[in-house]
Length: 265
Image 1 (cartoon, rainbow, N blue to C red):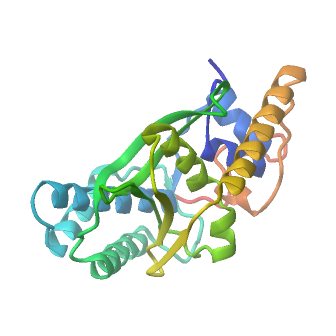
Image 2: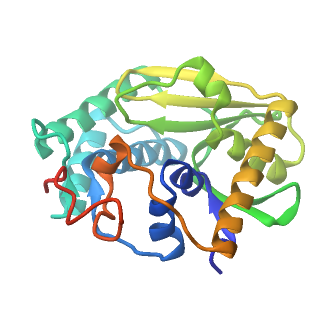
């Protein structure tokens, strides 16, 4: 059913551009296109997931083994609809950036003695136990020390690290904390942790119940706005910005014409 479940990425899509949200989540127009930044992020995530899976089952793989996997995944999953917006960059530049990210992550986190219990942990949960507000998400990594202390980890490969102030206001991991609290019931603490891999920066945040309440209320309000718009007239208007350079719905969008000229593949 359309608009039955929501994700953080979907809600953010609506806030950035309602028209893009409509094409992707309501009309369900799926495109093979993806930006090189997203492609890079997926390959780095997969390589780190492999690293911690190996750690859980045996011993930490050598850095060269992780690099080899990255090269293999890049070659296997590359396709001709990967778009590069920045004209002075090539696919090779981004491949090497991925290697640098993995090298830095390996160096900063070795010997990988974290209490990892899950990679790519999928969750579906309700806000205020209300079936009308069902949220889905995937946690990059979940740690637990065995005594009730939990950590929710998220890997970011973008150019900019999040400030502490922005981290304390971020909704994504706060929503995952709400989902985790519904799963585990009893806990001592839950810490939210972002790894900004390009910069080698780790940012942490601990939320109060009041802060989580605010996230719940704001998320429910946005979901209500989306549903009201859909039920009343279905007019999800485009919102032009620099982000249009990375959008693959130019052919559908009334604010644009033709194909996206900023994208080369």
